[in-house]
Image (cartoon, rainbow, N blue to C red; front, side, top):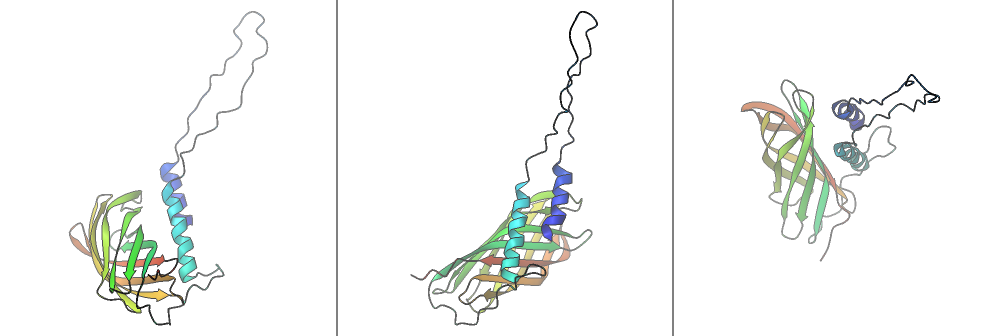
Length: 222
């Protein structure tokens, strides 16, 4: 599970070493001061939960809902078999993940949106708000956006993507094409993968893999 491994990383990165100390005092050495009262030990103050953990939980839940998963009891959605709508729009929201090859390999996650206009045959969107581990293994945010587009709307959608990301000492130029599929009858989701992502990692060619999973409440027909 994605969440289990990441939770450990976040805890190790963000948990503060608590220090604390109260003043324990002994008898003053004279007079009738009464017994010494020792209070409970100070409670260590942990940092607030990192919101990126909640985002990973949401991504994992969406992946299971759309694609299913072993042990989840869910089979996922089947590819759309009905004719695609001739009009209307759909806004798909979810996540994208980018695996970057090299030494070492690392994976980034971001929020994805795909807007489809069935009437005009226009497809646009992006993946943004990336975060993940860097080469040093620490969690970092990555600036930049990967833009999504397609030349037409069809059952097996070809989503071109391109953009630049930077963070954790890394400069990434990313391009590729995701072979995506509409899922559900009626359409409820879209998902696809590119196993041959082209990545320039700090100016040097590196391979990669791009995945996108997103869902929509319904196609909005005017």
